[in-house]
Image (cartoon, rainbow, N blue to C red; front, side):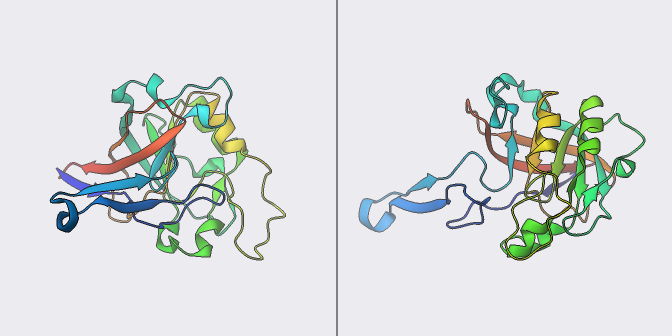
Length: 215
């Protein structure tokens, strides 16, 4: 088996979704001053490569703690996205075989991580999200969100759906959303995705996302 790390490192001042708390990684104790090292982390539940639980947007949605740990080891089906910046991913992009636990969308926008262009990723059309929910499939992608992100500049947003329709469709079916994956280029169409979150009663958490590929 070959393992591919799909996770952005947690670093001081790393990119965050507009309006989210910044990430701080700073020394609380040092070898020189204290004879040991301790690092202080300050971050939100949606920092870096992370998973969204339904309680993120639904008042009565389940939190991460309500999912069995086995949920986070998934049979994955990779989809290459042909939609361009701020274009919708239509239902015809979905694989005919709906047997996978999670559909992973490779948009290529991880190449723009840390730049304003990263916000102009493709997004799931509402009908696409509804079909995934009906199939009981989770969603993962190498972008900030399955819904449009706020533009950084003068991008044309006239065709963007309002609100968080993709999130809502998935969350209402108790599906999970894994965001900000990276380095999907080397992966085959089918693999095992493990993305275990911190064990926290919360609306989301950073994950260590790893693709496990049979040789």
